[in-house]
Length: 388
Image (tube, rainbow, N blue to C red; front, side, top):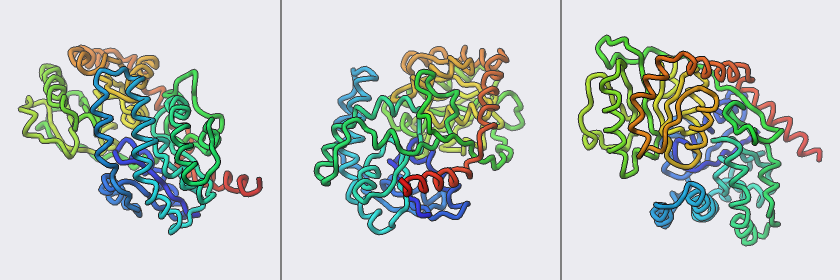
């Protein structure tokens, strides 16, 4: 089987697709990943065949620059409609069409916020599906938002309109997000196939703390927040909250962040550009994060309680869900929430109920089928599609 995977740039977009790509290859499939050039290091670094697409044009910056003062709902609407379905899709579509013409895939699997793969698959009459990067409720919300823009693209390609998004909602849905993380009112499509990632085992972390064996707190605000203007303030406030706690902390800030501009840190805090999260989780007693879907899922899958300081997109929803599960503490958005980090970390470390709740999610994840079974699911779906 030949599988084309399409993604936007950014670890939060491409990262969740890569375990599936490796699983497909382990079971004998040919895989090609098409994504903007900004994703090239992540994809080629993972050892996967890569089809480069242009990075989106600078005009998207004007949209993001106009989001200040908008509610989460209003900002999300503009980004989904104008950037993801509009500017980004227009930029990626010619190269994605070429990828299908040259590669002749049997199926296209895409990041659900990436729509050039969907349109190109329809143009070439190739089956398509989705690999979730966040909760199903976010896509349920987003499909009607982008439907009209996608139909504009379809009109230019000579395709039939799909005003209700059935082409998306009825397509195969693969995910490593456990049902516990989904919104109870919208747990995802009935035909969703859930899997657990393979566990490669975690080597010991380097001894950044000179023999200090106090509980490890892992801190990350993802790959986007460190590039935002307010990150130095967030960094310093977080470090100050951890300085007097009886913990050691590993703080990852992203490869593109100027470490020197962030200021000094106390001895119990060690800063790295990036560390594989799978290597950290088995050693972590708690995590402080932005509430990104991938980061939150990985912590809960390892039974690690969370302190979530959300920012944007699906992060407030993920923070709320962590709190509902009892697996951590949701603080207000970071401009207000940083003041509560120290007390929240103390609580999740001292109250065993938070870890027990996280471990219940971890048990749910452990009961899921392995990700290598996704290949059989795809094969069965394609057989049904061909017989229809």
